[in-house]
Amino acid sequence: MKTSLIIPFKNEAKYAEITMNTAYSYLSKHKIDFELIAVDDSTDGTWELLQAFVNLHPNVIAVKGGEPPGYGKALQKGFQVATGDILIPFNGDLSDSLDDVIAYIHLIENGYDMVFGSRFMAGAKVANALTAKSLISQLGNAFFQILFSAHCNDITNSFKAYRRNVLQDIKPTANGYNINMEIALTGILKKYKYTTIPIAWTERKYGRSKMSMLKNIPTYLFTAFKLRLF
Ligand SMILES: Nc1nc2c(ncn2[C@@H]2O[C@H](COP(=O)(O)OP(=O)(O)OP(=O)(O)O)[C@@H](O)[C@H]2O)c(=O)[nH]1
Ligand SMILES: [Mg+2]
Image (cartoon, rainbow, N blue to C red; front, side):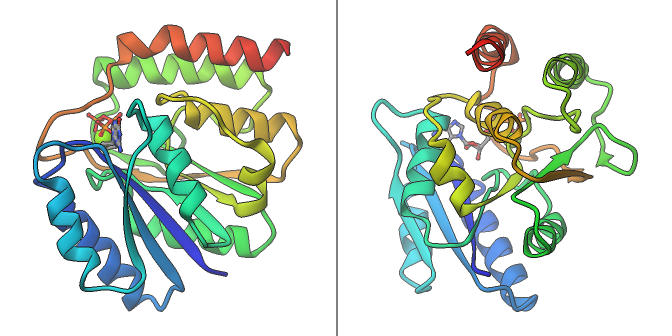
């Protein structure tokens, strides 16, 4: 099955080349049938770096994000242009692990519709588990796990794999980071077959996080209650 890695970038000039190169080399070396789809909303030269990379490889695409720009809009755009059978959002700051991408692909090929990664279950390799951001995330995710009887304690994490038809059915609409939970929780409610595996997660080395936990908490709660009640 062909895999599309959807990689959102917002002002990641330090990472554009490293992330694209690392993913490309790794997946080629492991003989994966793949394409890389960069979705960019940058003003810092990331777009130009992506263009240079696209010009070297036929299976690499770069597109601009949605209007108005946003993380969720960017993923939606990536899903629209992807041609793979397996769609995987992969962070542009190289926080997610390519070994885990291979594990996801095997699980989807073996019959799962969705595969979720958890930074908070036994076996996960995460360096920063005790920061305030991580502790709030663990608490919130435990709440969503209970509310949806989910077999996953990291619903908000972006790094997941979906069979193409699942996304075509769900048609996600969220504009922000809440798109990750929108897809996962809708998929669970629709009874798609899924599993959760422990993953590795690395803190970004360069640049700044674009994700504000405080700004997102109300949006996350609203998204969860809307999905639970309607
Ligand atoms: N295209 C696009 N990409 C975005 C947008 N917001 C964030 N991103 C990218 O999405 C990925 C995840 O964003 P981060 O800022 O790393 O958020 P995070 O991983 O929760 O935060 P950290 O833990 O600090 O890394 C990164 O590659 C960003 O560049 C956006 O509005 N548009
Ligand atoms: Mg990040």
